[in-house]
Length: 614
Ligand code: ADP
Ligand code: MG
Image 1 (spheres, protein in one colour):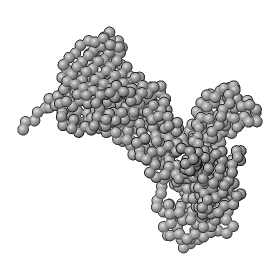
Image 2: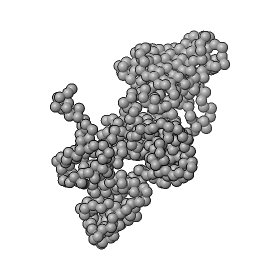
Image 3: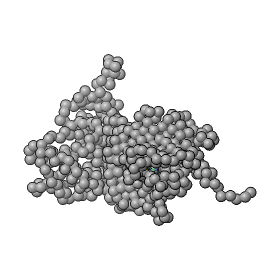
């Protein structure tokens, strides 16, 4: 056989097999070109699942007249010149393959006009050949219509799914683009019917609203985090908003949709104590990194990216999620009163850590305020933005100033519906059910509280806050408790005495794999203390090295063992004190393992059960 150089037409058809897999790939390439061209509005119109027509129009810079015909040639790109450019790609396209590939397997009609030109250019091409070229009067638009996709590659057509399915792929793709680029307004129609419209007002929340609807959008909280050169921004769902699969999780890196295991794992780890297994958080997260940090030069149809440092990405995403969740938790629902002053804030002291802490802020006039802690790394920005936004808000009297300012800060994020058992409103304790659940009536609602789960969360939060504030107050034992361990566990304890000390334990080697416990982080029964030490030792012996999360896991264990067990009768004073404490858990309704601890039944729901109402 003779070796021949492939004629360009054939080369393009072969490349088309890679780039143009299905109609959605055409939409992807065309719409990405629109974004690369700086468009602020992109319209995608399709007919019959995109096979008979895909038209993408944009208001971007357009293609200069002299470049119009070469844009269809393979390796024609205006985006890179040199290998060095490849390291710094900020555009979505760079291969110069898309237009040529699409053109090879369809009938293509392009109209384009740049700003400086009097009239636009129209080009018609089919199976890689330009069949018509001329002037056309038009506004500054670039519109590319692709008709009869795969008309000359019947094998491809066979692989396509039903029109509705192909249209679904396209819509998913446009959604991704809309989430990646809230600054661009996207419109998509299928058979003339509008499927999606985003405002392009640069608000991701508004884009999410257009895409998912109000029920999802109102449960989204903002993420804003930056660490070690990586920024993580976007929206995540409150733990009450979850899905049974990952279809509502989307990650973008430098504006490009990606699939990445590290980012997914970090997101889910951030929710670890909030969601049950089998439930997945909702997220739209934008990761921003220096271009050289990530390798995008993979196959164009592939979505996986490689990071040069996975751990850094994991940490950034994990803490972004964790901080956003914890800041939204400590925020009770309050009403703001309108009045006017111009507070100038000056953050005088920013302690480390965040959960449940307070931040001291000084106002003009020298007054100092205690304000609940905004997420790590954002205190100053957060406060300034909040105070500026609320310049019109004045507390009525000076005594309640601190409280009012606290409310201002709180007002940023409204928490989910929460239990509230404080004495302020009338509550009626009905009693304990099965020795395990506490029943409370309040304002026409029956609250059912899992005493163990609620107490567990309470202890966990207290320990976590105390640990981060370095205000742990360990309890000294009158007589030490001796705990027998396996040799491996005992070894793990001895190798980690510092870790135990940080948690508030004081342990002593008693020989023979026995460990004496002299001090504990939380006063509880002897059995519970033994269980804690055994379990933490077990965790350590299995070589858990999750860094900060290792301490968190140990705190779960302590909380779990120290918490009131199920099947324990409580007296009224105990119930009251538990309810009172739980009412301070603003916005949290799960135990550290993610099970809910309060279930609510409204009078109406109960009446429904009895078929009194519909
Ligand atoms: P790539 O995007 O990889 O550069 P394409 O084949 O997708 O390659 O496009 C080739 C070239 O055509 C681009 O580099 C760009 O200069 C031009 N182009 C394509 N679509 C548009 C558009 N909508 N607006 C302006 N220029 C475009
Ligand atoms: Mg392109």
